[in-house]
Amino acid sequence: MTADWLHVTRADTPLILAMPHGGTALPTGGFRSDWLARRDTDWHIADLYAELANATIVATDISRSVIDVNRDPSGVSLYPGEATTELCPTTTFDGDPLYGDAPPHADEIARRRTLYFDPYHAALAGEIARLRKRHDHVVVYDCHSIRSRIPRLFEGNLPELNIGTNNGATCAPALRDAVAEVTASSGRSYIVDGRFRGGWTTRHYGRPDAGVHAIQMETAIRAYLREPVGDVTPATWPPVFDPAYAVSLRETLSPILSVCLEFAR
Image (cartoon, rainbow, N blue to C red; front, top):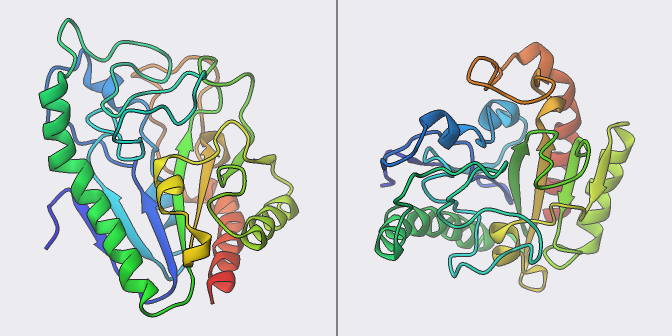
C-alpha cells in the first residue's frame, strides 16, 4: 500500500511515466509564501499526459519545494557551474528565497528524504523491477514542464520540447533518435540534451545495457498552457488547464510515447 501522497497506477506494458514535480502539497511549514513554494510546479502535468499511453504512472503530490525527488540525494549538483536548486530547495528558480532565517537543517533534510524521497524511488524502482521481469526492455519517461523564460536558468525562450538523455548515456541511441524524429516532425521547437539533459531520475535509472532506458521530456509551459508574458504574479499564475488549448501538444506527445513503447517491445 502506498502513502496517500504517492500514486502508482500499474499497467503491464514496458513504459513508465514518472511525474516527480506535479505536486503542490506543503506538509512542512516555514515557507515565506505558499505561492512561491508552489510557483515552480510542473503545472497540470498529469492532465497533459492523461490517457495518452497505456503505461504505469508513478506520481507524487508533494511540492518540489518540500523535497525535490529528481535531485541527487547526496547533494551533488546535476549541472555543475550552472544555476539550479537543491534537494530541499532554499530558493525558487528565479532565486527568490523560500525561507526566512531558518532554511531546513541537515536533520530536517534527512527527515524529508526518509518520508518522501525514499518512498517515491522505492515505488519507481519497484515498478521497473516488476516490468523487467515481463519485458527485455523498459522505458522510463520522466514528465516535466517549466516556464518558458527564466533568465537565471537559461537565456531567452526555452524550446517547446527538451529531450534529455544525459548526452546519450541513459538510453539506446535508437530510442533517442526515434523520439527526436517524431518531435522534429511535429514542427515544434525542440532540442536534444540542451540546457536540460535529464535529472537524477533519468541518470540514476537509465541503464541501457541492463534493459532500462530513461528519457526526460522538459516541456515549455507555453506549449500547452496560456502562459503570461513577463513576470508571473499570484493573479496570473498558475494558468488553468484548458483541454482544448492543450490538445495540440497532446497530439504531439501521443506518437512520442508510441515510439517509446514500440522501441521497448
